[in-house]
Length: 282
Image (cartoon, rainbow, N blue to C red; front, top):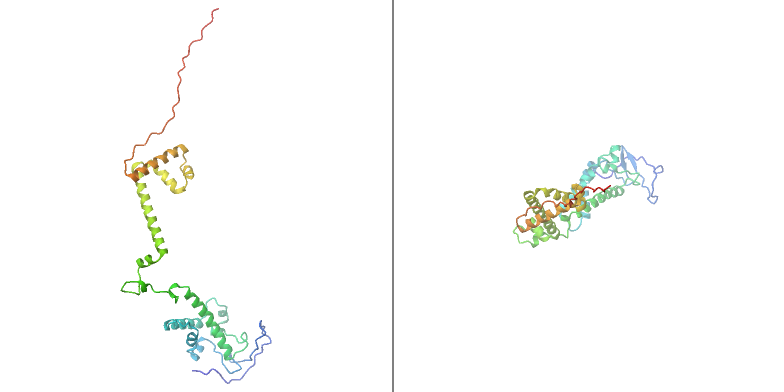
């Protein structure tokens, strides 16, 4: 393992030309040698993730062990360590630092922006990067219902031999939401079959009434159905009465009576006898 400090010729860097927002931080002088930043304590800042991991191979693992929840398993800690190492080892493709030739998080450490290059400031930067990523990972994990520590296993109340698994029947039986959704789906399927059976009955007994069923399904209201069919109110009323008659026979099983012919209003005819007008005598 390489040493964390180095004795090299120092070239001091001035902070006077660097604008900062927080004036409360006291800049710590550092030097640059062959493109490498060296802090006042002699700490040499790693150039990239490869060098960082070579010098501090267990840094991330120790950080996870310190900040992981007490209920976390060893497998979770290993997964988090791996994910955080991957996070440090590469930058997003859209990162602005890639334009400057940076390829990983470690390489983005800027001694000017962090007021120095000593080991404490470098570790603080890495710890902040790890904390931000770990907070995002943990928040995403808590949104997953299966990962919440307060959950109870389905198998604790099951009489099945395999307590590690549950089936759809068990979930539907123990979930009010799933039960209501299942009941609604079954009712919808039953209503669809009932309607199709009635349509087939009408098509067989009196197909002239089918357009009214199509109009009601398409519009939903009687007034719109009349306009959709393009018939008069009297014709629609006659068709509606016939449909009600067919529905009654469909439900009761009675034979369908013959349809009455349309009623035609009779016009009274009066036979007027025309007599010749009598002539008056001269």
